[in-house]
Image 1: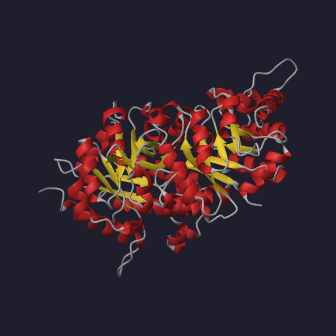
Image 2: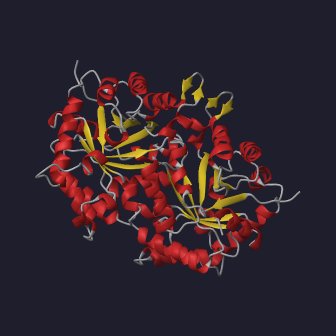
Image 3: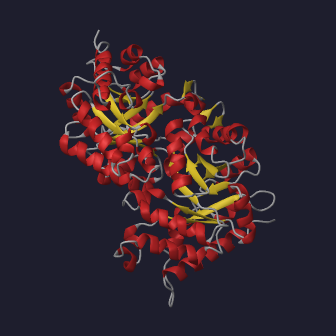
Length: 274
Length: 274
């Protein structure tokens, strides 16, 4: 099953638009994981088990592994997720961007080595920096469009023929790069009006939406702006707010993560219809 | 010594603007390296030894290592270059781009794990995706501006208030992001006129210039367009043309690589003055 169909099935099966981001910052992990040689894997495995029936996707952020030389643990995490929750799309958040021959190496990294269903990529280098990923015809390519960080406007909001650059990227992807139906876009939750404008441009194309939770985006406005007519179409990511959820009496970290994931999923679902 | 000063010293010491790119494609390596468990490291070490007196920088491309799960060999290569040729700047070509907290992890990867003197980054996510690298005040940040691939124009040539986007990126870096003097730009060799325009915008800022050799850029036009008044200012990259140089009678791969590197350095030097 290809990425887009797998994502659609997960939206329905788990009644969820929540993407659980796996950004394992060693300093924030419970003490037992900081001292274990495969502590990052153990931690992420428990988060995956605790949230797999609540999520439409898992999204490991490779930078957290690369900084520590922990690629092998990322391989283990991906293998665990694929083996135990094969119906939940696995997104490698890598934001790669390079010319053709090099992009093909990054595609091999994401799809062959880690077995990801989709990978995030950067559009700045243009079509031939994105095409090599499409050779893996069952996989997805999630292209940066409008990002949720303060500096996102430096380039993305530049005025190109009367429209901000990010809208040109949305149009380019929708009208040209998505000819095989493998594309999705990253659009941050911090600008709901812009999310609505991207939705208007791209039809039902899935949107990966970071910026709720720790980054402060408003859930109601985000969902209302980004949903499709069928009430789906989004992977709304939360990472830190779930991974490092404050524990209530009687909870361990995994139970706290599950509680926050459930609350977030349900908060999102309040605004999917109507 | 910081990156920019180290680069200046290497330009002079080796009388060279040549950057030797390390893109070790397993299928193209001599047979003895394909079968060795650390063959990539062995191959790159020989290339480094064969060209270290001819280069102003070495530039490993991380995608080739990531595709194979060979990060440990990349660590070895970087350690070898730093230990044996500490005066030659080591550039990690990674083209990273992400929000602040994640960018900091990528900076740790490039600067702490691999010990690179500089790293290539993507500007699409804006200032706060670049700033974290600046915390390593002795290191360099080489920002994509105008790339040499066919699709480079898709975004970089969009018309922003009468100027192509890449010129806005050049201006943004020169006027704002480079406040600590740590920045350089990537500008492809396939568009010499655009290289000249970037040079006019950024003063003496170093430019990393891919696109000669296998990519077909013209050396004379490239050097004349990109040099500074002092005849420096560029790291002109060649990867495949050196790494996989056709061997002449009596040459092994390293001697062939050295010969092509020498020819390329000298071809560049013909056009540095006058």
